[in-house]
Image (tube, rainbow, N blue to C red; front, side, top):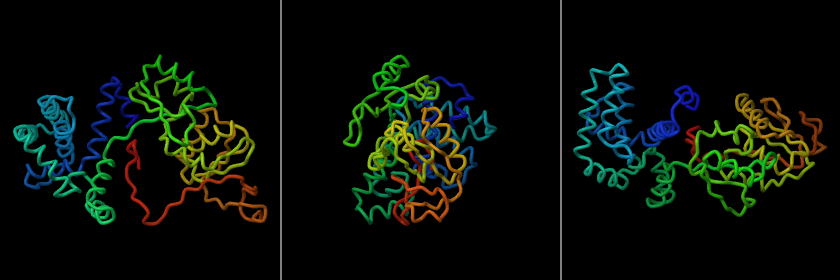
Length: 331
């Protein structure tokens, strides 16, 4: 989506709105489709027509800053522009029908969270049932509500290139609004929540590697590993490089930090992130499966034949969780 937005050359405001619409339709697809079925007697719509109806309904019921008449008008125009002129009247009728029943529908959407939580919170029915069985209806509802809440954006200061004072001064020039994040495992003024900002990739502070976009919770693993300058450490699931580059930061770029991952595309992204952030102590391994030599006695096994002082491995526990979209819409 980032490439498509760059090609469109949208203003920061329009770019933000476009991202909100795309992510919003993904988050609330089940609920939006339920609304559409109520007005179309369950008839299957053409894929583009279904998307347009979702788009209009999302603006009407989930966004407060877009006037309802504008949401209807623009959605109808999009239907005409996308070869659906014959269905433009149908789109108009469905959306205007919901405008006439706006208050009643808002009340219905609230009731749906109790009567059919999987639809009210737009989650798979099997998952909602599992969570209700495991934690009860109230906690399951809280989890589903949190799960569909847009995540906050955080940035970690890259002290290999800049300290927090230098970065914050640059951010003020770049019109970035921020707030310091305080957690027990974080150094002071290491992580900031980004409240408002232009597209990050256009900021000179980003291009020059002064910060890395990263949720503060992901830093806890690196802090627990506690790599020290001059040590050898292996990150067995390094891509795309957030924890890896923070470990390099903790090691002050001194020592040997080996990065391994099974995805060649993500390893390439790891290399790019290391280059941007000025990380020089990282060695990228190929994406082939790796047999760890954890001690000198294991030296006859596949390389690397070194005694690792620190090793970070991500373990997938069968049945331990559910895969879904992260805060940036990626799986």
